[in-house]
Length: 57
Ligand SMILES: [Zn+2]
Image (tube, rainbow, N blue to C red):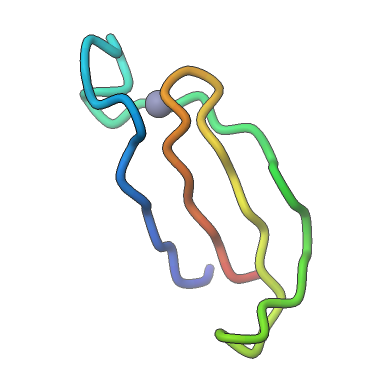
C-alpha cells in the first residue's frame, strides 16, 4: 500500500463509469523511479477518460 495521487481528467464529461470513480486503469509506466517522491512509482492511465494516477510501489 502506497500513496495514491490522482490527476484531473482531460475530458470530464459523459464518461459513464468513470464519472462514478470506476476507471479502467492500464499501466502507463511500471516501477519508475520518481525523483520528486524519491521512490519507485507505477503510473496508471484510464483507457476511457485519460485520468492518471501514480502509486508508490
Ligand atoms: Zn476513467
